[in-house]
Image 1 (spheres, rainbow, N blue to C red):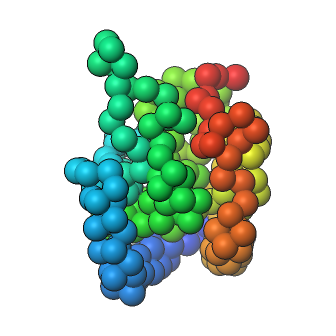
Image 2: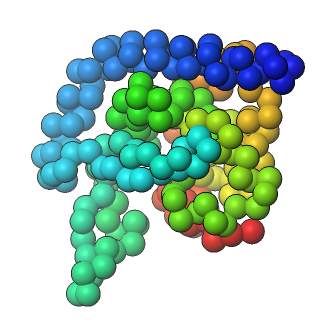
Length: 207
């Protein structure tokens, strides 16, 4: 796809598809959203929705929505304990099924995110990217992406960022459809949920 056609797709067609797909998904999955919300409230208490600032397109900060999957356990000094300790067995199951990600459909509907794109990471990583990796923010972040269907948390940060930039440089309707279909397979097989040393993924500490 030429750069001009790619720009038209990203600016107009892709956004329209995001609105239609996210709206249909919210309506279709409303019973699931309500059931998960009730279980989260019962198992982990309030708040049911976990919110966190994340950088989006052009590094603009937005508030990401996810179902809560961790407790608020803290040490004697009031600092939160490590993720591995706060992540309950229920939280692990929630993440393994990717159900914790469903509230991000509202981020997509709002325009913060897209169905497909580089995953929105922590704000603290912004100053750690090299010049090439910064291009992952040239498009809206996604609910799923090229890195998520090619290893997810089982690959290194450098490999993830290479895939992210590859996606940004080669976005197309056909590629997005393929990533969506591959995502369904990955979720059903529960591939790449953990890295070699953590249930989720170690923090990115720079290149």
